Length: 332
Image (cartoon, rainbow, N blue to C red; front, side, top):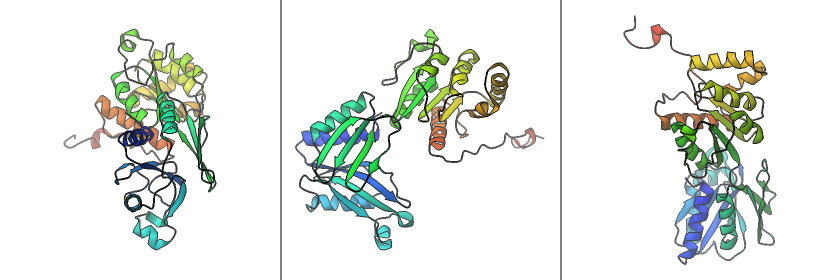
């Protein structure tokens, strides 16, 4: 599945090929409870057609009106601000007095956008710089950990797979998890030394990395933008990956298995491996949010939901396991 950035880029290039003029709008800065984060993109065609979003809808309607009546024209980028006053925030549906500052490019360079799309599709992390004063746009390699920058005149946005996910186990769950994660701008790779599983792995854009799980984890140099999930259900493989993952700064480390299996795994990691109690406590297991998932796609959704919650700093509360007396009706 294409990321949101690629969807916007594809629309801009497709519209240009069809003879339409189109603008690119970027959320440069937000205050309060803005509905879309800084860096969000929207493409706007000369007839009002839209791809992407910068708010919940009302600002898009105003931008469409500006495009149709000629207020978005020319070639020089400019800044638009919404929600400065309480009345304006209410008018545009911005909650809690939220404010959006947008950079509008009425005529983005399609050749540079094609270069940007090619780099993203190749799995590269890219920085795009827009200078309001000189109307220049530059595209260059970005470093992992770089963030959006905006000083009121120069906008730098980061595009491409800003997060990484290593899946241990070329399982059916992984086949659903990989494309879901790619849609959220994860660069996904898979490790499974078991030929009976790895031979059938064919998820586009999610390469199979050869080697044993612990070696693969060590070689990828996990950072705070890395998630590692162990899905083989084979302790000989999962434990090897977890041994290295739990010692790394990866923001998320999880393993498939029941509460009992994960309790046994934690005890095993403490007893037989060089891991501290704090490092073992980082293990997410049972993996995923407790949403009653049973099928592989449901489990993949629950894993990605928990990864998203952890990444965004949201509280993850797990219910206590039901006791036999309260597990259901008619049990005693």
